[in-house]
Amino acid sequence: MVIAASPSNGASSGSYNKSTFFLGIFLLGLVFISQWEQSGLEKATTQAVDRNQVKGAKGVKGAKGARHYSGKIKQISIIGERNSGTRWTNSHLNKCFGHEIKVTTTFTRYKHWFQYTDYNRYPHDTLVVAQFRNPYDWFKAMQHVPHHMPSHLKHRRDEHWHGFLNEPMTMERIGTDRWDNLTEPCQEHFAYKDIISCATEPLPHEAYKGSIPYSSHQPFYEMRNDGSGKPYKNIMEMRADKIRNFLTVVDYPGVADMWVMQYEYLLAKGTKEMIDQVAEWTGIKPKCDPYPPQQRESRRVQKEMAEYIRDNLDWDAEALIGYGPHK
Image (cartoon, rainbow, N blue to C red; front, side, top):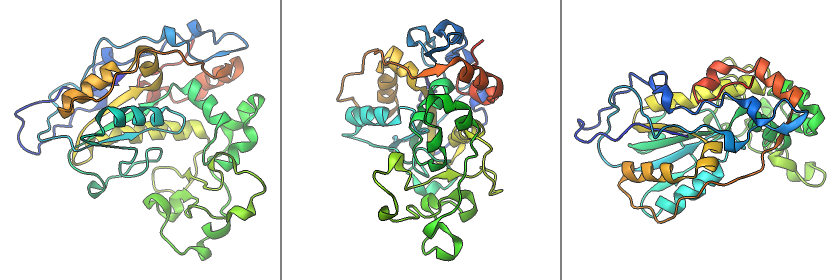
């Protein structure tokens, strides 16, 4: 799915009309995956999403009211959580448009993390692409591949899904991450109380025995995005806040627009719509061919896990990016 406004020519220089944001997006433009039962989730072990069943939007829809920007798009920033297909999208957009415009996985912070307002950290005008993955596939992918989440490594086995979904998003501070050992500012411009670990690598490599799985030597647990310094109770709470945080980016100074994309939609429908829209907005002729629709095997989600997600996830947040619960 791609949600975008149409570029407006003749707008006053530097003007942005952002009073009507995401709740004002035409609902017909959202991809509501509401028929999860058609994917076979009622079975004991099955795919979370049959991509042949994904409903596509009827074209590209924008926000209600005019969304204005003037001048030339100077950068495309891709943001999205771990295991959401952002590496694939970034590589594709770089191949298509990187010859004339910077395509990067950094906005005010690296693509995975909470963004914050600092208009000096990106050029004006920047087009932001926020990419998401349906919660069922995403939670299972995060369980199997918990990048930067050492406390969650013990839950990687499929049968440990409940522990994974309920493990607090935190860990003890270790090594150079302890306050009295700090010698540098925290990574990604976080305040000390808002990130574990403040130090990028709190322990030396020799402190680990054997291989280091999934960047666990570089812990990155973001505390609640409210300045409290308290951890999220679980990964479901964190996802809801991350969705809302990413959607606020549209109102940052110097942001030409923010588009929402669903990873499974790009796979099921191909990337022509996305490439055409980027070409229209930037005025750059792509040096690539769009990817055709493709089938990729989904991770399997147990019935009990799917039901638990359905009953406990913040579906108001999910609806903002076009997802609904299975029945």
